[in-house]
Image 1 (cartoon, rainbow, N blue to C red):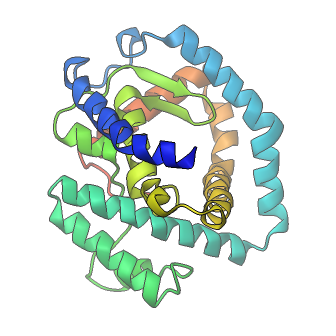
Image 2 (spheres, rainbow, N blue to C red):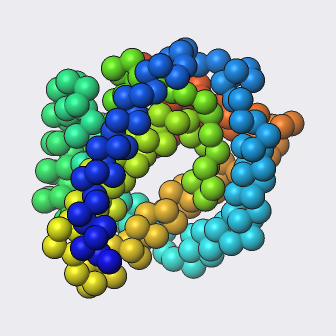
Image 3 (cartoon, helix red, strand yellow):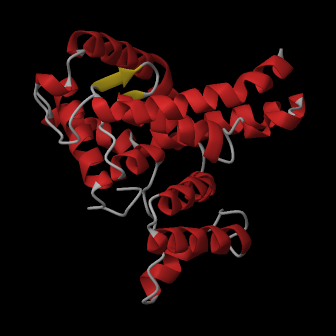
Length: 255
């Protein structure tokens, strides 16, 4: 079964990339937060409510327990390791966008933090950036932004089960980054797959998702208090944020 999947991998990846290119004819690249940008609102709201239920019942309690009982230094170290792995994605997409300044900064971060920072456990690169004129601060680049950089439309807004807000373009970009580029979740390695490798990668990927949820814990209360319609607030904030990132108005990955 694994061999069959490996043989179909190239076809799948080509199809994924072709679908992303197809989006050029689907919509304008201009972000419009009215219903024309969200034609699937009824379905999206249902998925949003489902995600909220799953998060409330399962994911958030696990994240809060993790943050409460795991020492803060360990939480920080784990987050640094995952952030360091993300710099691979940032570097590749910066190169694809011909943004050599961002690519050089991200590659430098990756080199420094992987070596002197012990596989990214210590974010030495950020300390260097703050203490000197060398700007190797954290960037944010992904394949969704890369497609936007070349004029590929965002397409309709989507809420993906267990994932959250996205667009058609960003969903394709997420698939490319996750399955091809990211060192933890890539399927490229399946040419030499073994069960031990998969057994290690799966919990690490779950840890990455948990780390991202922990980062959002402080946002929850603010969001609940600020939003009369939480779905609409999240949608509009997401679309505006993505437009800002595509236009390179913000270079920081974590806010």
